[in-house]
Length: 75
Image 1 (cartoon, rainbow, N blue to C red):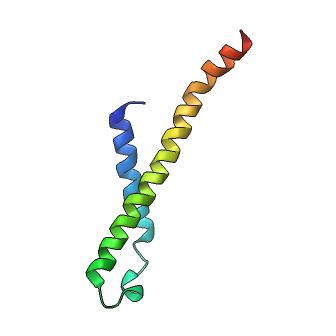
Image 2 (image 1 turned 180 degrees about the vertical axis):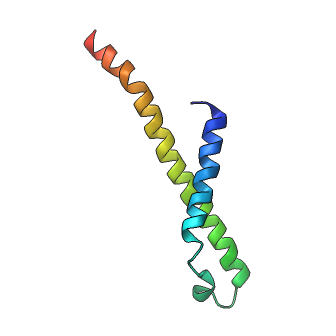
């Protein structure tokens, strides 16, 4: 898969996860450190987005390679 597409998928997945966790108020869990709560939200978005993008990249590569595997089995 093209590296530009992979980077784009990672960035989109990070944005998507950040959008999902945006309503969660981490400052309630960390009332004395609201700055750390903001950074925690960013770190969770990056880690979750990376995991989500890795899953979709792996599945895309698997689907792309599937015809080659089937052809190799029939030989």
